[in-house]
Amino acid sequence: MPGAGAPLAAGYPGQPCGRSCRWPDIDPGSRGGCAVRKPPSAWLRRYPQSRPPRCRLVCLPHAGGSASFFNDWRDQLPADIELISVQYPGREERLGETWPGSLEWMAGTITRALSDLADRPLVLFGHSMGAAVAFEVALRLQQQGSAPQRLIVSAHPAPHRQRHSELHLGPDAGLLADVRRLSDGQPSPLDDPALRELYLPALRNDYRLIESYRGDASRTLDLPLSVCLGAQDREVDHDEAYAWAESSRQVTDFQTFPGGHFYLRQQQAEVLRHLTRLLASLGEPAWQCWPSTP
Image: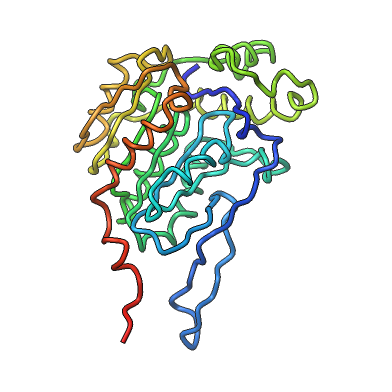
């Protein structure tokens, strides 16, 4: 099923999220010139940052995935790139929250959550279902005049080439079989009956979101777009991947990695090297972000 994903050891809905924190959000319009810390958005997980970032990498997970999927990336990215993981409702610390009604609604809400982060160049990375969500977020940011510097999509057909599937309407067994197929034999929390009971409702809703989504070929981006693929991924073929060239006037590259739908687990180091290269020219040198001294 396009957009679906296997739960990972640190990324399924019922698992503790682990430690995270945020670089302070400052309200420049606060009275008296005093800096005010804004309340954090539940949609964005931000990690410890030792200094102001040169740019920000916002990562959107697959169906059934969570912000924790990207936890390990923080220590492998350059210190001047701030990692931000999007957390969908219905999992981890948001387990008890209401699920989104549509993928488009969720994209609009994420767009609003990102509205305060325009002080640094922004890059969106979306894997599987997250690629479709990231595309919709990029469209909305572009429409409001704050387009991201780049969109990076992974393991998903172009929006107007979305595959037809209705697994979300079927029995639990069909959902479980699809997730196990995508797991490539990796251990899954679905093997635990108690965790399965927590996991399945959010998984089914994520499948509903992506299976109900229909992209419009007439809506295009005007920003650099990069496509990442697993060479053995059966969820997206080359024609569906290259159709992303119709979704932006500035498609710049297609990068293939060894592996299947979750190639970025086995190829994590190489994937992060590729992302670092794509982000290398964004923003000012890190030392220019520091306040000048007398």
